[in-house]
Structure formats: C-alpha cells, structure tokens
Amino acid sequence: MTTADEAQLRQLEQDMFSAIRTRDRQLLESILDERFELRVPGSPTADRAGFIGAILAIPGTILSVESDDLRVHVYGDVGVLTGRQHARVRLEDGTIVDDVGAFTDIALNGGWFSLTASPCQPPPDSSRARLGFTSAAAWGDG
Image 1 (cartoon, one colour):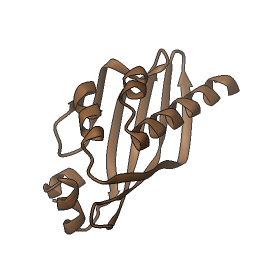
Image 2: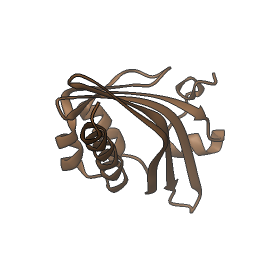
Image 3: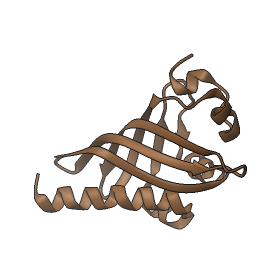
C-alpha cells in the first residue's frame, strides 16, 4: 500500500461522510458503485437507490457524520476501511440523536462497492421511533 492510496481512500471516506451530512444526492451517486449494497445485521440489504433514499429521508438536521479509529488497507485494486462512524441528528423537537456504529467499507476502482454497518450502542427506544427505526433487531439488541 502506498501513502497515496491510503490518502485517496481516506478522502473518499470523508467525501462520503460529507455527502451524507449535506444529503448531496449527486455526490453520493458519484461515490457509490452502481452495484453498491449496504448490509446491516437484522435488516434487509439496501441497494444504491435504497441507501441514497434512506439518507435523504432522515428526519431533522444531520449535524455531523464522522469516523474514528479509521484503518485503511489496500489489496491490489481493492481498498478496505474499517472504523466507527458517529452521526448526530437534531430532530424537529430539538432532541439530539447520537448514532454510533462499526463499519467496513470496500472500495473498488475508486468507488464504494459495499458497506457493512453494525450499531455499537443503540439509542434509546424513543429516539429509534423518532428516526423511524422500530425494530430492535435492526440495532442488534432484539
């Protein structure tokens, strides 16, 4: 792995988080491969259109989307990033919802091909309902 490869993947990850935070459909479409899929334990697999639609439908204001403990690996033309994502959303009533999840992102030919996410710490039941997530299984605790 070269430093340039790692820097390019880190930038791609930051572009992805920025596109989510600003709900930038065009940027998301440019980053996500047409064969993209998101896998979350306990939930159906989402394709590219479903993922983008879900981002655009998040209620309230997305305050931030960040990662920590980011690790980057390059295997030939494939990049694999792992870490924790922390997103903060302010709902219409002013409630702040924090969502923290582990992720594994796979990049192929400069675009995200697959994302796998697992919540680390489920939000309280009341926050889940406000975000439209009512299944405890979707958070890995039911």
